[in-house]
Image 1 (cartoon, helix red, strand yellow):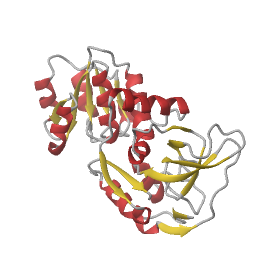
Image 2 (spheres, one colour):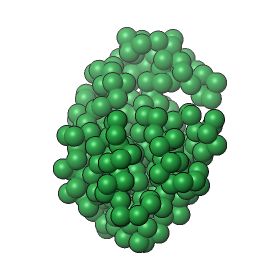
Image 3 (cartoon, helix red, strand yellow):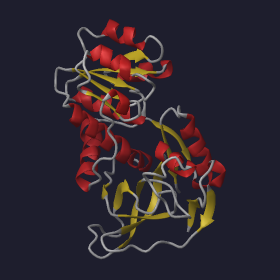
Image 4 (cartoon, one colour):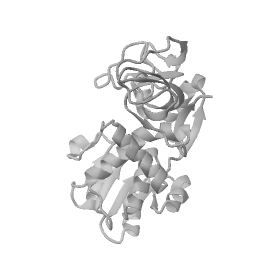
Amino acid sequence: MRAITFSAYGGPDVLQLSEVPVPEPGPGQVRLAVRAAGINPIDWKIRAGFMQQNFQVAFPHTPGLEVAGVVDAVGEGADFAVGDEVFGWSETGAYAEYALAKTLAPKPASISWADAAALPVAGETALRVLGLLEVREGETLLIHGASGTVGRFAAQVAVAQGVTVIGTAGSRNLDDLKSLGVVPVLYGDGWLERVREVASEPVDAVFDAAGHGVLPGSVELRGTKDRIITIADSAAFELGIPFSSGGEQSREVLTGIAGWVTDRGVGVAQGKSYPLAEAAAAQVESEGGHPGGKLTLTFG
């Protein structure tokens, strides 16, 4: 099969389109014929060697956490059948024509392959942080980076729960946020004053999905460090603010994410979709930081 691999840390040029053996599923695993794979910032950070202390890889390594596809082979004890359409987390790398996985859920027919591959990381992260913040109906939540994949998912869920959401974003995304029921605010210098102008009272919680040095201003806005969480700014450790990472990878979590999409209309803004052979270009766009939506690899 064809897969993207790299055998040394470095820039996008270390990514190679390789011919590798088709993997065989072990106990509890299934093999997927991959239809789409999600591109995440952690993919290029691992490739560049930035994650070596926390994420060791064996070379050659195939990137990719998020996968959607059709079950092609089933290992002993796996809870799926050949032909099932599923999505979830890959155990062998999703940038490949075939991948092994255990943590999967059925893909609803109404969800496209690209959308399914875009859901696991963003959905789990958004729901996890909203739960940690304990945001309740009638409260006001500020989301920094509300137009990003995670922030946008969280904003839609919070709005559906009766929360007033103020979301910061770039100028090109403000109308989109407004259409989702979010109070849009331009990010960048002066954001704190602009939030105060639209907030009728102090915000109840802050979700930083952007990581652009907004934590001190968020503390000033709240008047306290409680109910502020970031997923993107390492300054949190010095400031005594929770940095949330990792999370639960389970079928139940994936099913819950899919339910928000099918039952409540929560959606992912899709960016460019690349063929497998152009995975390096996809990572370059991801590394640039403003892809304009979720980047994916899609297969015929």
